[in-house]
Amino acid sequence: MAAPSVQTDTTYFYQSVPQYIQDWDADNGYAFLLWLDGICSMIQNVDDFARDDLINGRVGWSDLFDYSIYENIDTSKPDWQATFAQALQVLPWLAQFVGTSLPQMPNLPTPESRVAAVNNWITQLTTFNGFQRGSVSAFLELFALYLTNINPTGATVTTSQFVVLEKTKVAYNPTLAYVTDPYSLVILVPANLIPNTSYAVIEATLAARFGHDGYDNYTSAYGNYAAIPNAITSVQTFVNQNAPAGLLVTILAS
Image 1 (cartoon, rainbow, N blue to C red):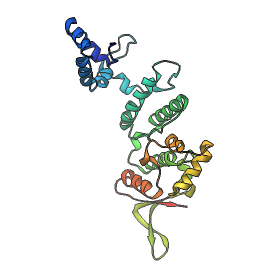
Image 2: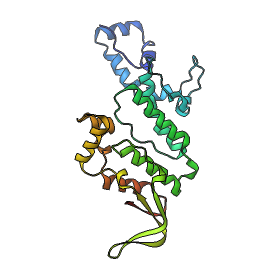
Image 3: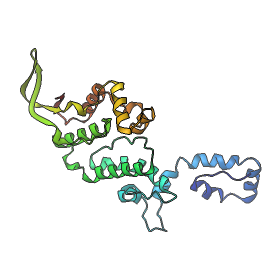
Image 4: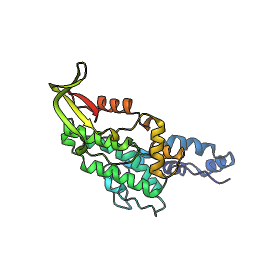
């Protein structure tokens, strides 16, 4: 019976075991090897990130802070999928250091589309102005990115499409009116940028985007069920979690 494929650290420790124990383990279906692999699998990622790469001359932990490793991943290399999987771990973690969060990665069908999505993440990391975190301008940038992520048309939303009314509050007395309030902010957003709450409308939009009907449109556009937009709850939740401290932010579809 051939030995099963195991983690790098598992192989390292297993080779230190006396040969007669390895022979006994092989006769018993590699039970000890698989047990050891279960333990090593919990620390393998940490070890991979921490260990110095003497072959390529890379210092330990550099894979966590050097985003260029994941830029324009070469899909012709046999290990490109491992590099892509590592990017999914590293880049969202790295985003916190520049004061942003990355949109959820959708289930993309081709290697090229996955590489493009990672490059978009890197663009956000390198262009986001973390020193403006907590400001109105930073909130608008995040909100535009959020709408881009949930919009089924795939269209890019920019802050130039918003109308911002500072020191303004919405009042209903009995109809909508704007009143002055130094602690409030109103953002007028074109209605077409906020997805309709009807799944039928979202499905039709996705069909036009991908050129065919089917459930795979949803899996291509959204990573999980929670990512499928609901115009009321998802936008409101985003505003509640990301609005600048001390400001009452109101989003109106115009």
